[in-house]
Structures are given as structure tokens and as C-alpha cells.
Length: 210
Image (tube, rainbow, N blue to C red):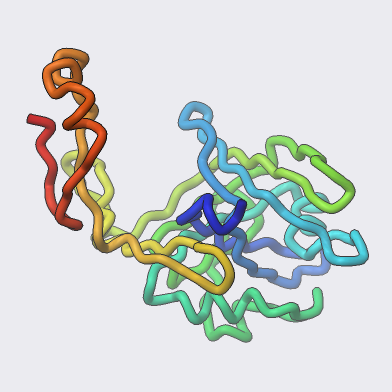
């Protein structure tokens, strides 16, 4: 499954322990599920002995977490935070990253990340003894200024330069994208089955449904 449901967005999750130790770890079982209210979902697997990973443990005890988006510039630092450090270790410090205090929640974000969403736990769903899904409501969003068009409030995916998770050790970039507007019923009917069954596109091109 994880080799075919690709690419998956990556949540670079920062939490803080009840003792005040910052934790950071990447999760690719992640997506946005609702815009209103703004809800993000994390799929978190337990350790082999079924005890909670630091991320899940900290969220259960503090009720807050921050999802940082990973861009290509930070991919090696992200990978470093995936190493199985003990709960007493600050992964951001180990990776040479900068923690910035949260605005709405008592949990830091990563200064180097292009986007960060401060979240409060909405609910948790246990799907087995080894896995749970954590839903978080976004309380505050931080977006690097050059990514947002201040007139339209649209984000620029090229400047965001986010990466995705593939199967195994694979990752993907989002630099070769294309636009494909949703056609009208009339456009679909006019094209017919034969032309719709095969797509011949140049990667990176802008596509017009006409």
C-alpha cells in the first residue's frame, strides 16, 4: 500500500514533553481532512513494544502539536529527526534547527520550515493496538512571506518546494507540476471516450481543457 499511495505529504511534527523537551519527527501518514473547521490528520504507529512514540505520548499529555511542512532545502535535517533518539533528546538541536515558540499553542515550530500549522488535538482514533489517527484543529498558520500572493492569498507551489514520501527510502519533489481545470459536462461529452482514455502531456506544461 505505502509504495502505491504516493507521493504522500510529510508532516514534520514538533511536540513538547511534559518535562519541556522538544521532539521532532516526520510522518507521511498525513493529510488535511477539512477546511472548515481546519483539520489535519496524522497516522502514528507505536514502537515495536506497543508503547507510544514520543509524538503520540506528548500530544496525549499536552493536547497540542505543530505540523511543519518539509521543503527540499530541509530534507536532510528532516531525515536526521527521524533517527530513533530517546525521549530526553531534542531532535531540533541535533539537526541544527531553530525552535520558535508557538503563538496560540504551547509547542514550538521550526523556524526553517516554509509553513507551520499550530494545532490542538481534536480527537484520537485507535485503529489497532499499534496505531492511532490523531486529528488536530489548526489554531494558527505561519507561512513564509514569499510563498503567498498578498492580493489573491494563493500559495506558490514552486516557492514552497515541498517534498513527498514514496515507497522504501524514496522521496519526490513537487517541481514538475501542471494545471488541469475541471471541465464542464459539455467539454467531456464533446471530447468522447477515445480522446479521454489517453493523455499525452509535457511535464510542467499548462493544460487547457479545450
